[in-house]
Length: 478
Ligand code: FAD
Image (cartoon, rainbow, N blue to C red; front, top):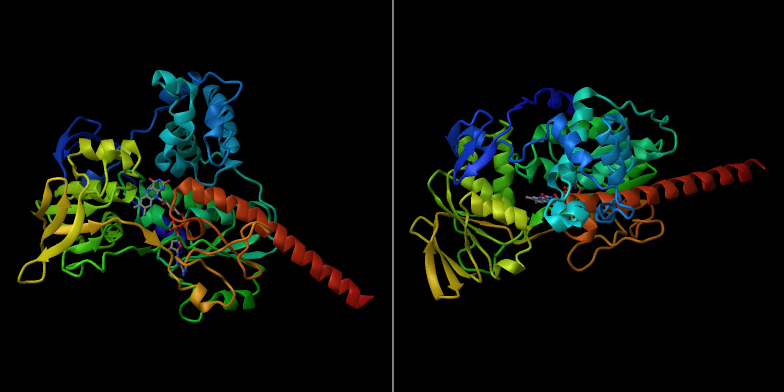
């Protein structure tokens, strides 16, 4: 099923670059306005082979590589950069593969400025090695050239069900498949990838890249069951155990967006979630829905409430749809959780910001549509006219699985509680969890880091129960 979807992908290799407000430039320097289909083309150019090798050669090969310390999954950055500098792409890729199942994605969306690149010694001179772009280059090269042929063990060590195919689920599945487990991913959506597919916008993370990374995980022998929401239609954690799975991993993320239901007017037409906008636009870019189903029309005045990366994605997406966009944030710029580069890009693209401004209520017209937001601002209370507002004020886990399964404890906000021994096991034996559903919304690489640790916990657990089963059989025989 997944392969069939992969075949449907239309490759668009031309790289586009943001030039100035509402205008985008392609490789031939041709300008075009936003709102056209091409405005969702990627904003970060990929290195050519020469550029990548030249960049790798700048690495100082530090005795104590701070870049590696800055990587949450301890990627051996100096070594893969060194191999790249000698043109050894396959070796560079196998070094990355030791730690990451999703390098083409991490290379594009990790907050490098806070991690590897931010820690690079050359950063002091403002010339840090562009590690993210090098990682991307190697991963793309590997995919395009089909370099690596991994030898996978036979699936004999045990059967594991993974619920959710975001970065956490994909990492657990990839790691366990490599270690000889028979893994099946159950995904509620009609496409694998989680937030990578329906959250992060196309211009930052092309969906062709996500599909190719997932195809590599599929090639390790991982099975995908799509359109399968566990916790509904009699598919539960218990029914999966009944089917013979030895362990189950929950990597279901935080799919319930926080709302402003206590605020007057929050139910007006035109008040929506940012994640809904991003999902619609990704579906539109994939050709799944038509343009009129995307909830922004050109020229509309759009507000985004929030100051995190989701708010930046919604604002930059709205700009691309031809809207006049203002981000409303309750605190000051320095307290905004969005990474600085995302904020700078939003400003460069024409997004406006209102600081220290909080919503008192939403004002509607006679047709129950949003007309204005009544705000408390540093200049006092005022009504600011908007056609639409998108909320980006956080999210939390759904309770579909825990409410249909006995014995999985969650905290007061619905996050799954896990143990350290075996690593990542919930209060229900054999059921594990990791990623955003445990540690609150964070980042792709932190979901992967948690998932890698839980994968080793699952392997230990399954080995232990298999050993106990064997001992029991011996006892019965004797
Ligand atoms: P998710 O990615 O949320 O995946 C959960 C999966 O489980 C989904 O596919 C979902 O459909 C599935 N699922 C849920 N319930 C069920 C069920 N009952 N049965 C079956 N399947 C189910 N991080 C970065 O590092 N860089 C970024 O640039 C970045 N940008 C972001 C932009 C947006 C708009 C958002 C929302 C997040 C962004 N993040 C970013 C955060 C990052 O995407 C998440 O931290 C990460 O995806 C969490 O991974 P996960 O696997 O835990 O959950």
